[in-house]
Length: 347
Image 1: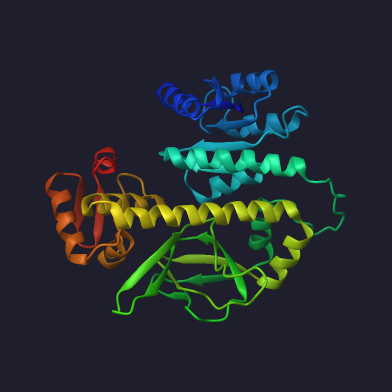
Image 2 (image 1 turned 30 degrees about the horizontal axis):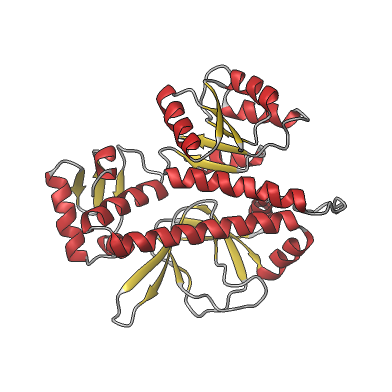
């Protein structure tokens, strides 16, 4: 049985999360703050650590630093669990050496998936033969360093809201990292209706079709809001992946998780009620756009309907229903979520 250390100062969230992990066959050690968490980590040597950021005594960044400096704990996978959603905060956590970063509120499946993938990675790496360390100055050793490479050396491109980043069937010579903004990928159906296939946010990769062949883009990518990207050539990325198994492994994990998310969205589109599809799509856009409860979402009704997989007329009727019930507030194109928890419980 794998052991997980959960460091969280919110007692209710700590107890609920610990119960979830125990029901999933993990042994759980809990700590109410960073200082105690560091002590428990050194004593228990867990297989993985899940840690909040904003805590008394020692915050999550301090915990990660202390764990990384201790020879007996430096190898332990570390997942941040935090209400901080800004791109710079996520990048800060990853720069310090975190393996993953989940934002609150989180889905139970997302947390379990992140834990399973990190533990699987450790198991795979432990079975690999050790390879000599790289000595080249430009070596990229992990996924976070790969993202930093995009930031530092990639071609920076900016797109206004509604601008096309690349079109379906166009040659795919570049891979992009989203620095700011949200991007939608979409295809045009035979009847002329647009179908949104995925939504991407800051720190997501964009433009994968094949690692080795220049297969054309399979869908169109368009900026949902102002977007900034960093792009590098597919040939350069291939060189990095060939030289470093660890980066290849981490990137495969990311792409696998992306496929799982798309499958989840397709199941929702196929089997959920119109009301649930609409509610979940509003919450999805609020999360992607990093909106706080008091902030309005400015998104076209056609995009909402396309992601939800329903007709625009059905979407508008459902939004009107939610407005009458006081779940949302509508002013033109702007939609403000008034009751987050109630919207999440819509069936």
